[in-house]
Amino acid sequence: MLDQYKQPEFVAPSTSLAPTFFGKVMTAFSMAVAVSVLGVWVSFTYFLEAFIATPALIWVAIIAEFALILTSRMWSKRKPLNYWLFSAFAFLTGVSITPILLVATVAGGIGIVIKALLATVLMFAAAGIIGWTTKKSLEGIGGFLMIALIGMVITGLIGLFIPWGNQFEMIYSGIGVILFAGYAVYDFNMLKKYPEDSYIDAAMHLYLDIFNLFIFILRLLLSNRN
Image (cartoon, rainbow, N blue to C red; front, side, top):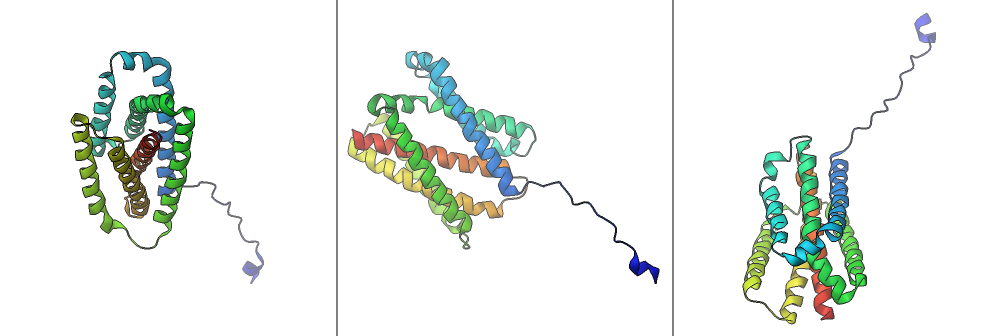
């Protein structure tokens, strides 16, 4: 009888907040964006003269980027190696983007870069909201996006040897903007399907989306200006 009058035992609430998968992805993504900005600053501060004197040096950074992308499945789940290599990848992208930023600032001033950044942030945020909140799975458009990406890559490689005019540059850049905005919607939607330990893979996809989206928006603005 007396048991019912006993005071209930106090249980302290748990103060541990386990990070969600989405939180891990966005943390790694934000880190990569910050490191890429650092790469741009280091490149402009210390490497710019070397790049102007020897443009082929940029290809060293680009080749290293592709090497990290192609081997990402080997290291993306190995902590803390995944954070180090993902950071190195982001830093290299910041270095390799230096030539187009230099061209943009010479042709249109820093204002055109700021406009491209603002347009990229707004478009990427809109794509993220659409991809994350939609209840419909967008897995089916992945094949179409990949085919379009392959076509863009092939066209871009041809453009290295057969330069095209300003009008074609506008068309090519516009398609690139649409493609990577679509990829952003798709990759945000696919966050719901990733395994828990694949947050670096997911963050790399989102980082590549916003990086390429910025490149093509900047190219589009430059082509309109010229």
